[in-house]
Figure 1 (cartoon, rainbow over the protein chains, first blue to last red):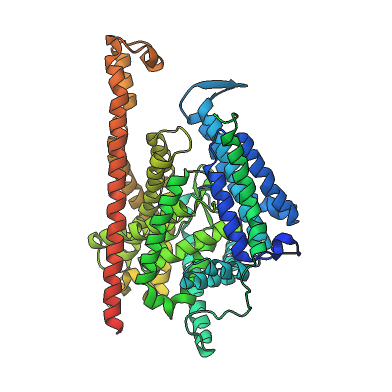
Figure 2 (cartoon, one colour):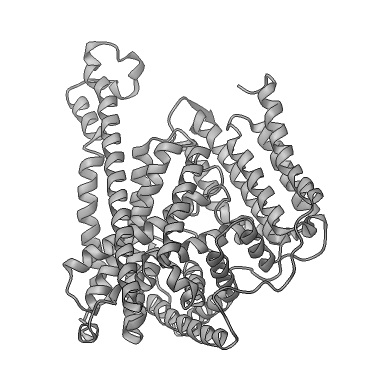
Length: 261
Length: 329
């Protein structure tokens, strides 16, 4: 897709200590997935239910006291999809309605609004988890939720070296720009790709050095767990379950009541 | 390409999650030997590389830009199974840590961006390897062409998922046309960058390219002269041939039929389907059915192409794994 990715902001997350920060990682991830699943099954006509779910997740983000700038930067990632959702109103079939100068498809408009709402709720949920959980805890939590061990280790290495690799690419890019490289057409992308190639070789050779260093320190194929993780208490599960429960309750009320077609 | 939550319906999300989990389980089994020891830090650093490379925007045309997916690049560098794991890890982390791609969308995001690009793309890579000379430049060209194709395969997968899990009344043809059209352009960039990256790696450390492991040293040293421009023209030519073939099927064509209707003086047929009960509009009425059959044929063809490509990639990976296992033990 166009737009691309911003450089990651792996630092500066998980600050402060609040009720959300104190919950164990696996509890938070499980609750987040359950919540997003409930949001996903909410019919697209039920805008009131989506509104309740949106308020619920905004409440969680507020409770976590995440910096507004951090939330906004992370939300920017979904902007292209909000545009795509808006476009469905234009290209979809079905009866048309006039909104100002535009003739929009009515089912397309409904679908677009629902998709946009679900997109935003989903992104806020991820932000709430990522913003309140230190990355090593998050990975360990995923492992305890059943993600295969090699994948957890792989993800750990990825995140550990991500900033370094991204930084290397940024430096190369800056050096090329300083020497007058400003690609305008695809045929001029060659040097950019060549720098990716050398970057890969450097990255891989760093990996070889890292691996040799780890072997000399007794690496056996899996990272030892340094911190002791107590099993989450029932009360913590119950606290985290509040979020999906609220979402499900809103959906159930709408289903039982006459409001939902 | 990182679809957010609620973009496809829950049934599709669950089904694709099951398929993706299966593919990842398979990849884990194939690459267990490598991942249990040597390659974990290397694979992790490659994943960091793919993650970072996805942040590099390249210009496509008219001020728009695309970014690398890197699935095929990882597959050629590390083998399809490990490549699939690497890109799946990237997609997972993007969803969990950077809110890029929804949590419930992980199933289809992993399928589209990791499984199909690495296994499906690798099958295309092997096919081109057979056609092209057994040399370093052959590997580079095959990698570039398969890199472009992997993006198109990914877009085709998304369209197919849309057929089953649409959340808005946009027909399959429209989504297919738009997705494949846009991603053909992006695929040009992906192909070019994949080729030049492979070329740079082959020049320095040919031993790091799993997709060229079968080549003897002499063939690796044999490097043809080719420029970014030449590669781009080759890619454009390939795309043009593929696009011509697809458009024959895709739109042969509602527009054409409409024009015929206009030429024959059937006025108003295009905007009055509800009054089409009379004999004048009999032709028009069949157009809908025609179109539907066409759409189904297109969907079926897409499914067959995807299944064939991914299946071939998985088989190739399995064969490679056995050979490697036999060689090391």
